Amino acid sequence: MSDSTSSSEFVAACRQAIGAAHVLTEPHDTAAYLTDWRRRYSGATCAVLRPGTTEEVAALVRLAASHRVALVPQGGNTGLAGGATPDTSGKQAVISLTRLARVRAIDTHNDTITVEAGVVLADVQARAREAGRLFSLSLAAEGSCTIGGNLSTNAGGTGVLRYGNARDLCLGLEVVTPQGEIWNGLRGLRKDNTGYDLRDLYIGSEGTLGIITAAVMKLHPLPAAQVTALAALASPDAALEFLSLARRTAGALLTGFELMSDFCLRLVGKHFAQLRYPFDASHPQTVLLELSDGESEAHARGLFEQMMETALDAGLVEDAVVAENLAQSRAFWALREHIPLAQAEEGLNIKHDIAVPISRIGTFIAETDAAIAAAIPGARMVTFGHLGDGNLHYNVQAPEGGDAKAFLSRYQAAINRLVYDSVARHHGSISAEHGLGQLKVDEAAHYKSPVELSLMRAVKHALDPLGLMNPGKVLR
Image 1 (tube, rainbow, N blue to C red):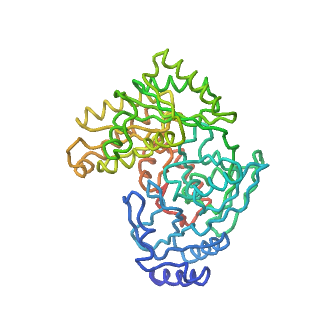
Image 2: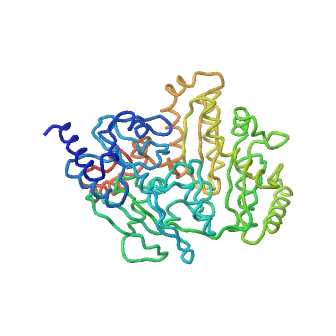
Image 3: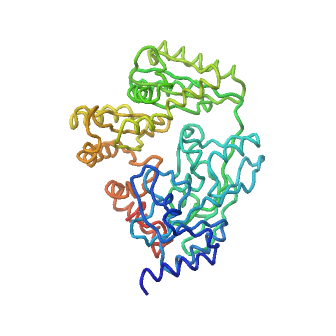
């Protein structure tokens, strides 16, 4: 049987299983599913499948197994590593989870919310607020990314310092296995020592071991007040000292600690004039920090005043401004959130989503900046990220006035190697929160040990022996 015959029979069987309206094959219908958010990867597909229930997902997976059709799970298609984009063969099927969009339950006594994989992150946040609770996962794409995608990449965001990443926020999963069986692990337990932790195995696996269809996620009490401030500092090392001081002073109330270089903020001001530089004088680094207080705004402001007074006296902080109202707080966060948008306006750049131990961040930045400056004079560093958990977006912009396309073509491979070698020397990770997808699959193979790769391949083969679950992602 030819591949085209097998694909057409598979598509016909899918139409019978979930209805023809939810099996898309026309180019104008499938186009939005075939290119990643950054437009780095574009693929082709035999069909885009849009199941509406977990049982329909299971039926489609069984059909894919019987017809030997590979499946590419996709949520909001906001990923940054090409993990939800099919290859160019046209033989793979995209399985979109966006119709699995129900909030199944909210349990305020257990502080949990049970949601299907296609629920948009912002909608989970809103439903939690309606119940008087906080769902703490927050990231730039929260208006369109989905919980299933967040879990499949173990998304981080701005609240990891206090609340942890997606893995830390998940208590249970429902998963369709590569054989089309349904594992119901929606137990919502904080203690369960009954064997291997299958939940953690699926989280971060990018759909290569099975398809997450629902999850039990942790909720937290709504804070009585959130207070935001910007602090100007001389260096990343000073920011690390300030982080230690903030932790000693505020403890668990410290929920955000974001580092932004002077060039980042200047770039935002250049392309978004309404977001002005927050200080009268220029400073090498700025930290955006936020306290979430369960007592009162007055209590939070008192802690801020104590913290800033100590930091200024110690010479750690050169200047500071505390948001006086919600609008100003949002403006502070807008500075941080517009950095990637400003980069895009400035032109093509080389992005790195890396993590190193928090204590090594200052040394990593100094050493790697110097190496890049020596290799490519004039290259501009756009360095920002979640300092409190060691995750940096360490990006390289072409020299001002240069040809950005030519810059990428000539230097991208060399810069990646330079940056990732530095990450490895500092015992870090080449992907902190975006996943490997197809973007970094070969780089991961270069830096992981043979033992680690062998173990990963053994897990993949044991769970997905036909290799039909998102092939070419995470592992070759």
